Image (cartoon, rainbow, N blue to C red; front, side, top):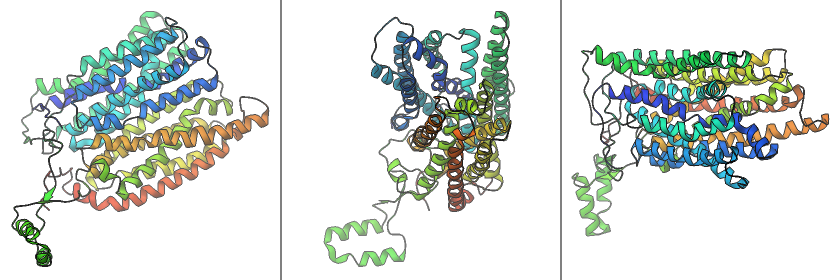
Length: 562
């Protein structure tokens, strides 16, 4: 990896985190597809099947994170953000030219590729922001990951507010904003998203500052939901609309209060500054995990058994015994793993399948929430969408804070909470299947929370397999999202829905039978996910007891000294 200049001092990480808030909100641009999909159908003359295929392109681009993950260990954050900006500008630019009818007759396949390119900017933005801040705050990675992923989740509500309040429900205006507005925003803040040198000691003010950021983000989420509902129900004057947007912008600037406070009221707490939590300045090819091959009497016997294999081999072995030559060893859990090394670990696949089962079942509900509402007799599904968005954000945020508390106080692995959330989802899907009046609102909120808790896999992957290759490792985990959506949503739920609609002789299915079988299958899926999470928790508990034995995360040395 090329040398990265790391910013020193206590304030730069918080300035970078404040800038990352805007980047993460921009990383939610894929969630705007429902806002302009109707225009794709009406203006361009697409049928519903073609619009659905474009929706798949949206999910595909958003979750194609392997390249950004690999690049996160090779490129500076600003370079990754620049690639995301270019992707956003080119992809949404093509869509804007088509929807605004400035350019006519663009082929369907070109629009499909344009949408993949446009939404792939989400992955570049999110990876650059998340990887950088996880490295800048290694002692609070659960809270930081929950905050940043939560902001991406609530960004849908922010874009909806802009769409209804400022852009006058115009798909063309929205696509123009995505083409120009988001790139300009990210170019403005990209200098501040940079690697910093974190403190090795426990900073007592850090949890307080993070609690402030979590609190303001919760207030922002509630504000966005209320603003969305009010603007849809009532006709607001123009001045009030601008005031509502201005208040939203002020909330997004609130994280700057932390570095401002640190500037005006300097703390006397001093903490040592290491070279880096993950030695970012080291070259990729350098060996970071080496130990002498022969350090015990057992090794001496192995040496004697090799004396007859030739003089050269004997000289090499003697040199190894004297410590002149060192041999690489495989990393242990809690140290830095490359993606190839991760693939052979059972813990990685247990985590991958647990995430795949939990997220896949949750995405099935979110992708079909409008159809589920219609099937239950709800004509306006705006409330359902707001409920899901808000409580999904709460789940992402709460999971980081709760797991961070218990991992430090009780050394409980974060996967325990993933399993607990999936157990709640089992009963929630059964509640969906029973179709009791008005319980759909409660069930939707619980699914949103449970789905948010599955993002604990991000912090878990960094703790088990290190931060050096975190970017690509966690993007492999995130592939469970589109794969789960394809299997459980497109194939399972879509097939059952069409079958029941055909029985009714109507393209729109009405009644609880439309999704009952799907909900029962998903209940079983989450039950299996709960079991896998429990097994993984038992397996990795000793790792967490070692990492958090002192009550805070113990940074692993980059050279083995075990």
